[in-house]
Length: 203
Image (tube, one colour):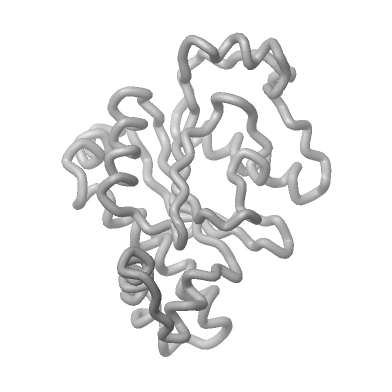
């Protein structure tokens, strides 16, 4: 494991990066997080540029900070956060930047339990036009899981993350080209806000 402040420059494979992220999450779950690469030396080392190991699409929910739940530091993650982890044009462009210019080998689409946006969509709520756009984007996952047993919100959140991860290559030529040549892995994941655990979702 790297010491706090140490900069990682070696290229890592997608599986190596995901192994590191999930090991960080296990530390977070056990209350053994080390908070790596967050000191002044690290701050100075990334001041002139960034080489994140992964991009993460997460909900804006204050309980879901990717750097903390994966126990990562400054410059480690390129994070895109939108309520309901919905991926619109701006978010998709941000992911393309991370893949093409920062050359991240992994994009993690992270859903989570007790998501307020999914809860609102389940209740059929509406609001401002922009908020309604988020709620509408969540409906396909809600409809697809309507017949499943268990927690409806959790089922929908998992399905939404899984669907987004699967759809990204079709929505972006830049991401598809990198995925097809083995330079990019796109995975869905689900975070439980009560236990602190992140699970990788099967395609």
